[in-house]
Image 1 (cartoon, rainbow, N blue to C red):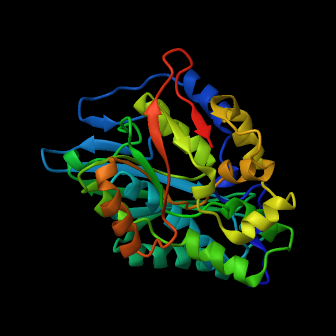
Image 2 (image 1 turned 60 degrees about the vertical axis):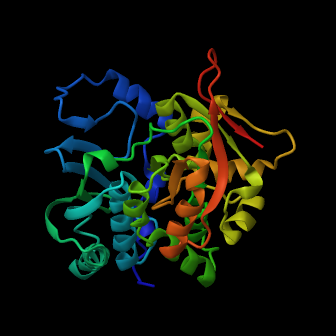
Length: 350
């Protein structure tokens, strides 16, 4: 660990510092509508992971940006996590990343050039692993450290996988376990063990490159990555975009063991509560389910797993793709169902 604790500079951490879903929706509803050219395949309409612009009959450009304040104290690890998280949106669309630009904001008077260089080195390391260059970027002097990427990718227009393509009867598969936000909260309190920190790093720095394979599988209808709004929040986006509802089996949701232990003892993130307030009225929660589990399904995930909606016949291939890429805890967590014609999209946890 570095002697500089980066998290001391940030009021939030990772994707947990996102604007709350309800407030974000209100802000976006007041934003003026921009131009929408016919080449824009994916824009703001369903809160998807990235924008997609058709270049020609065989290529579409995928563009996204993501940055946040430190979720860990070590500067290199912070850079690695932030870069992995930013590239995840490209993979969630079924695309292959081709280039990135760095977004850097640092309290120059408080952090040494060496610490800042370590953040950049961590991000560059991940981009090398993804096979892409960091070709430029922008930096400013800020009170809180932030780091992230503008990421660009390429995909065949027919292989774009949105969060709005789900079909009734689709099986839901989650690629990574939940609990990263809770581990981050424990870290800031000085309670996270070395093994817990290692688990946190392993999950948050694992590239979701499996999305490239999944985008090419027949029967994969929708994808998104689970990040700041938690499993419930991002699944609701899939449901709304697809005009469907969902059932989720709580016993099948993969969880990080140490995060479960912390949640049982009341160590959770403030963002999980904000997430639940935003979507709790659209969720049916079983009376006998533990309240700590609510914190996990709404826990903000930084660099979380891909959530895949696929036909039942495609499940073996989807799970095999996850296993081949090292996602040993990928699991079936539920299914998409018809939405109530009056109440609209909901999630039923069982």
